[in-house]
Amino acid sequence: MARMWSKLIAVLVGIVAGLWWWQDFDEGVIRGKRVLVTGASTGIGEQLAYHYARMGASVMVTARRTQRLQEVVTKCRELGRPDAIFGYVTGDMSNMSFTKELINESIQRMGGLDYLLLNHILSQDLHFWSGDVDDMAYLDKVFEVNFKAYVHLASHALPELEKSNGHVVVLSSFAGKSAPPFSVPYASTKFALGGFFSGLRQELRMKDSSVSITTCTIGFIATDNAVASFARIRNGAPLQRIMGSAATPSDTALDIIRGAAYRQREVYTPFLQIYTTSFMNNLFPSLIDYIMRCIYSD
Image (cartoon, rainbow, N blue to C red; front, side, top):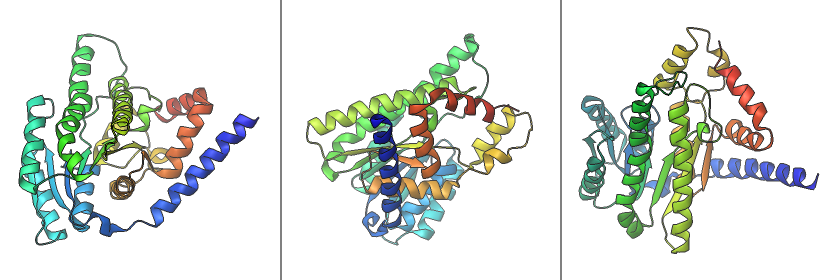
């Protein structure tokens, strides 16, 4: 009973703390910062770039589609300060040599780096895992893009982030807490990210490093890619019960920026939904598994 009460107190304290930092965010702390956002051609990454630009930061963005990146940079210039630096680098995150080139070019163009936001993912191929040749090849590809590229980018950026007392922000998912069906490769990378960056955070603290690592546990967000993926696996069945709880990419980006600025260990967004569900998953994992299966069923 005492253990149950201690956990209940912990979740209530977390909710109160979350609401406090959400309400008292001073956007002025972002002014003049130098930011690199990966996967910034659409969705949350695109909105991160816009919010950082609006708050007065210099922003570099990257993805695979040059035209979309050009459009994002154009809007950043409209939103941002005249003296801020905005640019893009087109590349494929499955190419590990590109990760070093991206970090070096971003540092060169902005004169340093304060925030590294790791957001890119390989588009999900939602299906039952069969373990055939195609599944194995897809698993390798997903780990290159969704995990190894994150590790390479953070590792290349650490020396510069040490100079600026900077931040690494890792966009993960509730799938890294409780794996949903149809997403075995994707969820595996999210669990791997949690392990790597938790261990790295510990080592940085042991070395008295000033670099912070914020991991973002994200729920269902109404991005075009997410909605399309759910529509495919549900065979056209209505999405109202999922969409009703979905947050917008813009609101999600703001939550991430606030949490990173305050050097939060972990950001949950949408906060009440995902923090509470994560807490419940620790107590009743089978119940959360059942709910997840219901959500993904027709």
